[in-house]
Length: 517
Image (cartoon, rainbow, N blue to C red; front, side, top):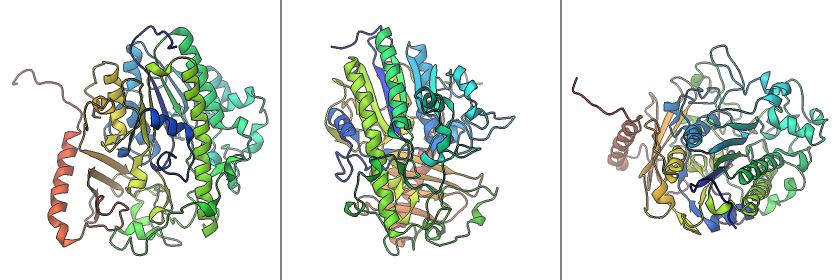
């Protein structure tokens, strides 16, 4: 029996993971178990060609709520801030009568605060629990937020998660973390020492369900974002999830000999013991991915052995399976409250992940499909076809305008994402013929952009003559870079033009011209 609502318009439940490889859903990859995401795929449509606009957290997450590319909304890399004056989808939904809430990870602001750009997600405010007892919104179009800034042993414990830990009786939670940042002991590997009952997955699901109960009781429409932190490294999971998978029974990705011979120089340098990337660091700051990938991501621990490479995949899958359990709790509560039939559910991730593919670990300036593609499932009973897999290209910048369209709302001119509502509901085969992906870590030296269509992908670098060109049809694993292949010169020129036209076309829509002067 469906819950009566004050509006016939659909609710929206956005569920996201953090740094999840696109091919880690059990319905399509039998080595990992995700029964709840499998159920979502069975009841909705799965898009196999969904892309992030930037393969790092802040830019991609900001694009989700603004419908703009990072180069447009301004949070163009980690350490930048999404300014509070940027228009977000939550503002439009709230104006249309939606209650809006974000539970979990935001990461719209940096961990350091400045006088010019103050950050609510920065030290010491991050761990000022008295402040967070009083502050739960508004925040970027969400009238209610419950936040934390965790990545397993990068756990900057504070905000609403720390308050919840104390409410649950885990008053000694500080014993698991090291001052002053609240980061866990970096020597701890694979097994998360905090019991599952106090894990952030438990917190996100419990608090998301509490919000759903409020909405069901009031009958108000809602936009709820349940934002999980996993499976972002480091690779840590509590019992029994840390040992759920036998490392010796998994397929462990690895680099093909010679595959980086025709790639830009920073690819091969990742396989060196102590590479020198100083030429790329004009401001002296570290760059995601520009490091030796023979070590862990936060790699001062030790060199990865063959056993480590297998174990980290096993724990990565365990983190996904544990997260799936708590996603299931949210989906179950949606059902029991009678809200499911009138709720659009979208599951996706902010960007992908390397766990050995091409010899790479984690993320960085490498626009392989492993990193820029994301899992993407949409369910909306009676409106979205069930059990369908589509190769229609999606981008995370499309999510905000599509939510508005499905609620019959106008799309602001500032949103440059594409309305995918007709594709999600099955009335159109595709809404875009390409996706654009940006990566920028420095003002000039690290600046790359990728154009990808149904078959080809081209990546260019600012002020560099090297690049990448892959034929995804003939070379789906992206092992043969065709950039310098004389036989592909005409194709490269054609794709460069298509990229230029795509760049011109993604500028914010201008105001209409009303007079010749």
